[in-house]
Length: 266
Image (cartoon, rainbow, N blue to C red):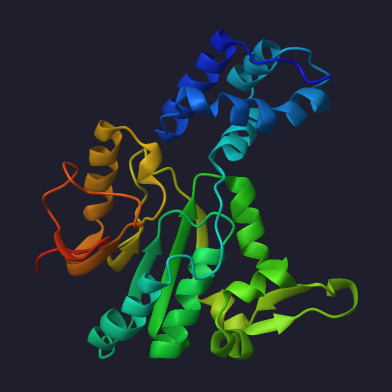
């Protein structure tokens, strides 16, 4: 029988995830926390979430494991396709004469979004004309992203022209799985980056995608994260968020091009 998560124990994990990742978890997330951490209690032979919290506060590896489990979100190939259409039809032609376009995917999760970006740009520009930094706070999802191996049914989210050109179907022991061709995979660098901390030296970017992340941040955290990320966006560069998010009251340093697509003044 799974232990119950008390309100006091839940508050401890709320504070932990806010301190580690800047994520504000509402009380409605209590079942999610309980469910996602239950296996770790079982693995450690623990009877209470309080006992597990003590381990998390003392063991940095276990703390990272808890953060990984609590920050993983749903993702799939070509999610919110209008963004990729705009990238191919408007942004790519604008930067076609540039030696190399640099793009940052700030919440790569298990890799579907950065691989979608790479396929889109490869078709529009050619694989040698761009590079992508894909980052996430979770080491667990980054490990999956680096493998680039997905159930073959997930390929149904990829439009047929992209699927035919860039996806490789597994055989033998890899039957039932697919991966992306080497040129696509080699165009992406995966790194663990906590957006709630001082950013590492990642250079400057022409385009930044930060989708389905800020909905989990408080207003203050949103402003702090945006200030950090916009310092890495070149003048004239584009910033893309999800359709379910808003930058109202978050920053005045961007101009809206379309709903959820913004540009930094040149």
